Image (cartoon, rainbow, N blue to C red; front, top):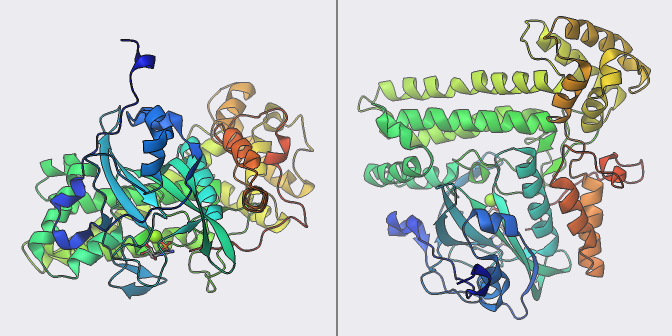
Amino acid sequence: MDEQQQAPMPPVMAQSFTQLPEWMYDRGPLSPVTAPALIRLNGTLAAELGLDARWLAGPQGLAMLAGNSMPAGVEPVATAYAGHQFGYYNPALGDGRALLLGDVRDRAGHVREIQLKGAGPTAFSRRGDGRAALGPVLREYLLSETMAALGIPTTRALAAVSTGERVQRETLLPGAILTRVASSHLRVGTFQYVAARRDPAALRQLLDFAIARHDPQALQSATPALTFLENVVAAQASLVARWMLVGFIHGVMNTDNMAISGETIDYGPCAFMDEYDPATVFSFIDEQGRYAYTNQPTIALWNLTRLAEALLPLLSDDEDERPVLARQALSGFNTRFHTVYFDGMRAKLGLALRQDADEALFATLLETMQQTRADLTGTFRALSQPSVLTGEDMSALPPAFAPWLERWRQRLQQDDSRPPEARAQAMRAVNPCYIPRNHLVEAMIRSAVEQGDFTPFETMLAVLSNPYEEQPGHERFALPPGADERVRYTFCGT
Ligand code: AMP
Ligand code: MG
């Protein structure tokens, strides 16, 4: 039979999480919404997951994506976790507004979890309503898909659904539900939660689960827990380095918002920086700037130290040796961060060879950018033109850059012998033309929330799905905000 004529197929999902102790999850009842409607389905991702997009877009699919009813065999759970929020330990967080539908094996053979965010109260909701407002759902959809298009590890967005209901925040806002996909939703906080019970067997079970999912190679090691820790440290160091290279500020790097997989997770008040300033903070609630742009590597290491503490009992049978091994694993962070960040900077500046003086060259560029309040994305993109590389075009950057440009061009002379066109092309493949500009994200959200107009959302999604390629007619998406368009603060909206 022709594939087109087959009936749409409901998903076949496992619920692997229930292999873990039963106190780690809750099977709550569903909380149906009155008038669900599909805002967007990510057909490409559905195909990648082996899911039938026609079924997902149909009535039963919509019912699942709205948390109204589940097809046979899909048995959602909300999972428990703890976490340090702004440095303070909270022993009981958990999926207060998320439901893990289950997991599938994708076309590449990897296990991927599917989760609803905003599907109603769970056993872990505390005083929250378990819901999500439309604005944050669209923000997460757009930013996570952009992150994927940039090639940076991230959870993905499979669907956004409006609920037809309002949620009470500072004002009444339209409600929505995001369906997101992650290789797992295990967090540093998941390990903290289990470690706090002082039950080594349960901790071992969680570790085995995480290793099977993310790091099966670690089983070959004589010390799987240590190898696992080292690999999580490396994955996070690499992730944060990649955020830094594109100016991404997560905004709430609490230990419950840091995924073991090394994927960017829990997009809240996050934003990309426009003008380069290391002290940039957008999140309104981050009064001390704990999660400022420049603090992100330090905070990531702080969070990983909490993970190491949680794993301590499994690191060695010899109690005295445990902290030594933990420290050794954590020491891998700086090395890895340094390598990914500086190699990334080299690529951004079109350099193929490593030289000792490169780091000073990068530092001077950043200082010049900070002094001139230069746009981070725009500056690197301006450098990625053959005429700028060769010095034919001296006006692409403000005059304050002239001494640095001279140094850079001299450095290029000592690099490999690629012609300027090839070098510039390689630079444009790592220096995005488009990032989700905060002011445009906010305007997109206003259109959807106030006018019910999703055209800006669709347009931005399309432009940002190809962030490295100039798209004629979409020049305004590459521009920094005007003086009156700047967005100072972002909000969690929870
Ligand atoms: P976040 O800062 O968004 O990562 O959330 C921190 C914790 O608060 C998590 O345990 C969430 O599940 C929970 N939470 C956030 N918003 C809500 C909400 N509207 N209802 C219930 N729980 C929530
Ligand atoms: Mg969170």
